[in-house]
Structure formats: C-alpha cells, structure tokens
Length: 431
Image 1 (cartoon, rainbow, N blue to C red):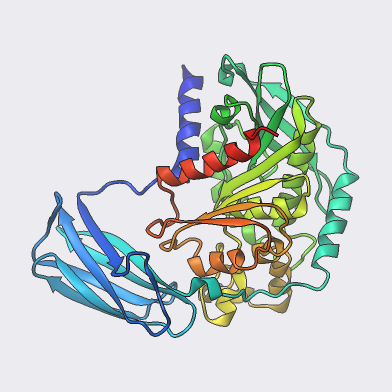
Image 2: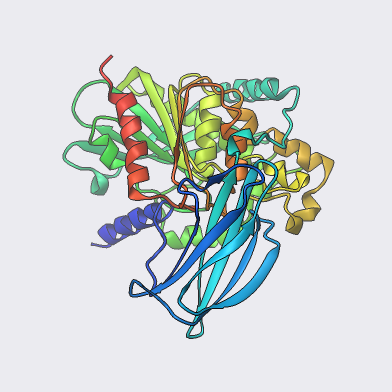
C-alpha cells in the first residue's frame, strides 16, 4: 500500500509541471483586444480587464496594474472598477517584442493576479547571445570524451510499477564529467511483447525530484526512458529530493558558471547523449526511430539533445528554458534561469557570459537538422516569450509552431495531446 501511495505521489509531482493553474474564487481575466494577441509596431494596445465572482463581474473592486515590456513593466497605477470591467491603454512598442499587462485584484484582504501579453512582430526577434567560433568543436570534443567512458548499464526491474504489457526498470549508466565519472539515472519502460520498437527520451524540467516513467506511452508500443539530471537515483523518498534541492543542489544552474568545462550543464547535456547510447543499445530498439521531448529545462534539453545527437529523428520542445540568456545584457528579457538579470549583477563577468554562450539553446537551435514541433505561450513569466522566439527564429530545419497565447509556464490538456499525437505519428508511422 505504501508503494502505491508513493507511486501516486510521483505521478502527481510529474503532472504539476504541465498543469493549469488551480481554480480560485475570484477570477481576473486579462486580454489584448486583438484575437491573436499580435500587433504591428506602433499600433496601440488596449487590455481588457474583467474581475469575476461566480461568473459575474464584481462591482467596486480595486485593481493594481503594471504595463511594459515583459520583465520590465514600468507603468504602474491602480483604479476602482465600478462595474468590474475596464479597458486599459497599454501603449505600444516600436520594435519586435512583447508588451505585458499584469493585474492584481484586491478582494477581502486577498490578492488575485493574472496577466496578458501582446506580441509585436515576434518572428523578427533576433538572439542577443553570440555563437562562439569554436562552439561545434567544443561539443564534438565533449562527445568524443563521453564515448571513451564505458556505459556500464545497470537495470533493476520494478515489479510494483510493471503492467500486463510493460516492464519498468530503474536504470543507471556511467556518464562523463571533467573531473571523473558520475552516474545517470532514469526510469525505462519497455513493451513486453517480443518485437522491435521506436524509442522516446523524456528529459526533465528544472528541479530535484523522483520520476515515475512513461508507462502510458510504452503501452502504445514505444520504448520510453525518463531521466533525471543530477546523478542520483530517481526512486528515493520525496523528502530526499526536497532536502537536496534546498541544500547541495540549490541553484545548481549557477555551479561553475565561470568555466565552460566544469559548468553544471556540461554533464547534463552529455547525459542526454548517454541516455540515447543506452536506448539504441537495447535489443528491442528498432534501430531507426528516436525522438526527444520535455518542457522548460526539458524543452531546452530536447533541442540540445537533437542538435548534439544525429540519432535523434524528431524533437518536441515545450516552452524551452536556457534560451537567449544574454537578453538581459541587451536591455530585454532573457531566458530561465535569469542568470544575467539585474538581481544577478554579480554574474555580469566576461568569463560567465562566455561560458553561458556554449550552453545557450539558441546556439544549439542553429545546429538542428531534424523536424521540430515547438510549443509555447505569450504569458510565460519563467521562460519569457522573447527568449523562446529568439530560439525558434534561428531554427532552419523543418519546424511547426503551436501557439497557445494565454498559457504561462503551464500547458492546456489540448496542448499536451497535440504534442503527444505528433510524436506518436512520427514514431509509429508505417515506413
């Protein structure tokens, strides 16, 4: 029984990364007037604001609002909404970018917040980060170093997680880092029926947590591997990860940022390649069809993995992080983890800026050669849309964009379904 509750907890934790915001008593609705939320430079924007209680406008409610470029909202004011609705003058932008309106309604001592973001020619946004001249050579050497490390794959069957049609394993592999080897852990799900199957690598969002594996997709006839990035088992008690996240792994994305060879994400990126080494070595793998997907940090890793590893045939990134992080150095929003925003001025050194360029998703996106389904929204405050468009605009391989303007750092069920159906269509297509 305890194992069942643990498993349910794992599924809940995994699902939260892509869930809609929880319902609240008071709803603040904010939207630009244009249906597609998109404007031409110089075109004025009006943001409609409605505060609802039980589906009806709430009279005489006070709102506080801010308007300005995302992450740089400068105009701040407050007003009483006599009838619960108002149209706010948002101004405009004269260059490509995003204009955001954030609204807080104050009701019975509680605050209820929402936002909307208008786009101005986002397809013209260009990256702030520069491409290092030896970028490709750096990563080719890193992959060559990884190839010298024996995989030493170890698989432990997890009977309590297996189903009638799928075997589930806790897997750990030997990975590379500059000052010695480290292990990579994940949950492997393999169809029981004898045969050859395509494979899907699931890469994780930011944080420190256990993983449940993707049994549902494996039941459709696809080998799945869901990995962690921290070199620790992914089946331990949740309290262990909470303690690690608050302690040794707190702000791991800044570790050794001043050294391109020792930066934390080097072994993370190489670990994704190592995970594919393992997948393609499985006797059940069909030898051809391999895809990668994930959201946020996982969206970044989806692009990075597809760029580094020619065995990947399809990539489905969802709101990718680590994108155009240098945007803040040019006076606009940069991507998570916001290492160069004004609160992190101590990172504004030549060494850290140069290191970040070797890990920025923009520079991997320029190397992509495989089809990509790219999904994002305009209201994302964790991965600002400017940073994500800077990545999308430099992808030269076949690409499909699925926009869900209202979404922030979460997804609609319909969005998840679209991404999954696209992956299934690619992986299970009759050749």
